[in-house]
Length: 88
Image 1: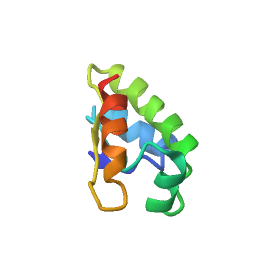
Image 2: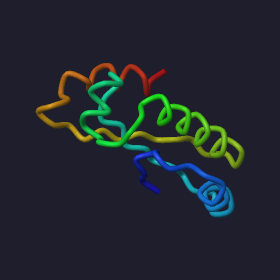
Image 3: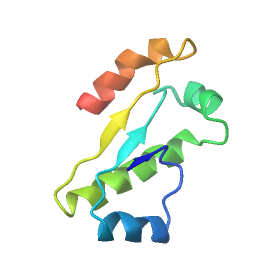
Image 4: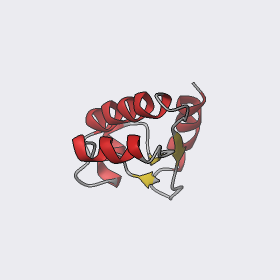
């Protein structure tokens, strides 16, 4: 399942767990301000909190969270920090 990670409520958690979903989360910048500019309505701190929770859920049934990055002219300088973060 690919998601922007912005919605994670009890219903989503139930589906993720019951279906043993392997989450793929799209993150287009590491800098919070740039991320919020690219993804209007996203709050970076909340997104990373949701990512942590997705990781906990997936680990509970032996999966990991994968990440995707949409490379654009507005965020190309964010790609290296993104790679460093997801490698960690």
